[in-house]
Each structure stands twice: as structure tokens, then as C-alpha cells.
Length: 358
Figure 1: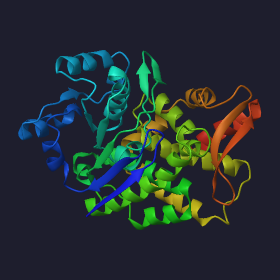
Figure 2: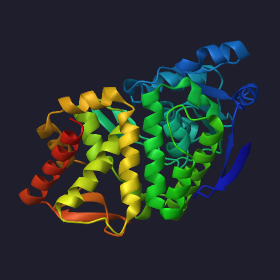
Figure 3: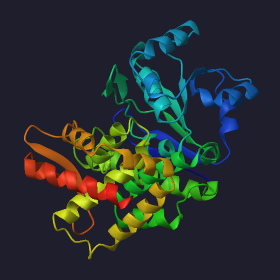
């Protein structure tokens, strides 16, 4: 099975191709490109006799400080303005490669081969890069869309359960935000850790087509695309407070639970929106598959989590910006007054979620 479709962007359309088991064929075609790969795949490249610059997928390497070394390696290897860059790896490799592709000799065309579920269902399209600078996470970045995205669902076999669950949570978030049809299609693929590649292929296509709507109507994150931050304000805070022992997608799932709890504390009822109950049940299943994250959740300093929520960069001078679920099941951006009362309710929502996993 395979599927192909185009994404429109301000710099022109780019192609997404999803095909199980195709990586070896693609790898053979990368010979004339400059390749940046997650070091995890070193043996795959060596077996194929292919060359690459290998980068350990660690947050410390997704940085402005790490970029010059890679750029120098590319230059010494003869990369010029006509060179095509290929990135193979998950989100860290993608962010680093997209940033370098956007600035090397004022911009190179590039291809992305995502290798984590999270990258396959979400970050591989949209063109954003985010780079850490010193202690500051995602402080700089660019919009620089790839020319081609090549997705091989068979990479799921290389991933531990927690990474799979992390990606599947991002997928259900996107589909829920897009609406009932996308959400029900997602659930119909029977998302689960270690799901067969053929089912994952259908899930990936549905998730990317759902995200396609957001990034085509709002490429630069001004309005509709902001809704895809659903779960992120709470989730980023939990990730940071756990010193990143809680993975990003799991944090997003916990963040969505916090958003639901916040609304329920405000008296919002979802009796007329059964999709919310389905979402809650599905997140419980996905988060529960990562017992390490559950254990870390119980250790969190809740004051630290609350401080991180309050300092999120999406807030304004006099409001907290939260993505919440409306009573009808739709996802909305609410700007709530920056008062002690609002913050206290945020704290209660976080506490309720943590206690639900006790």
C-alpha cells in the first residue's frame, strides 16, 4: 500500500509519500545528497554503503551551538547551493536539519524521512523548525518546508512503546481538533502500541491530511493552526518539571486531560459531546502504556508545574491563553484574565489529573 498527496505552502507545493518498507529503496537514491541522520541508523547506512553526517538525537544537539559543526562538515564535503539535503530521524534531527537547510548558503532544498511515530503523524509537515539556544528551549527557528517528505511506517518496529504512544497521542490530538469525521477515522484504525504497519499507514495518512487543513489555511501560526497547541501549555510544563523524563507526546496527553479538568471545574458539561468521553478513554489507554511517565507524574512538584504554565510564551500581558474544549466538543482558544483566581483553578486542574493517576 502507498499514498501520496501535496501540501501547499508559501514557497510552493511539496509532496508527501507514505509507503511501508520503502526506506531501503529511498536510501539507495540519496547518494548525491548531503545527508544528516540520527546516529541510531548508522548501521543501516553502513550496510547500504551510504554516507551521512550522524547526530545523536539529544536535546543538547538540537541547538544553535551544535549547528556550526554540522555546517562545517557539509562545507568540507563540498555542499554548495545546488546540494540537496536529506534528513533521516525524528523531531530533533528534523528541527536541526530544517534549520540548517534554511540558512546554509541562504537556503537548500531538502527531503525529510521521519523515523518516529510523532514525526510521521505530525511534525513532518508544516515547515517549522525550533532550535535551543543555551538554556532556552526552542528560542530560534524558521519556516522552511521540505521539497519531499518520505514516510515509511515500518520504522515503528525500531521504537519502544513509550515513543509509539507519544506519537499516537499527537495524532489523536490533531484529528480531534480537525473534527468528528477525522477523529472517528482515527479511532477506526484501532491505534495501539505495536499496531501493524498497514494500520499505522492509514492512521498516518488520516493524521497528515487532518493537519494539512490547518497548515494550508494558516501556515504561519496566526489563527486556526494555533489550535494544534491543544494540550501543549499544560504538557510542556509537565515535561519541564519532570526534567523531560515525561516524553513530549505523553505530556501533551496529560495536558489535554488538564484542559478537560479545567473546563469541568468551570462547570462545563460534555454530556452533549460524546467524542470527549471517547478522547478521555483513549488518552487513558495511551498514557497508561508508559508506566515510566506515570511514575514520574507522581513525583512532580505541582508548584513547579504551575509556575511553568504561568510563564508559557503563548500568554499575553494580561491574559492566559489556553486551548480548551467547548461544550459542543469543538476546540477553542480562550484568553482568560490573568488573575489569582484563574491560576488557582489551573492548579486545581493539574492536581486533579495527577491524583487520577495515583
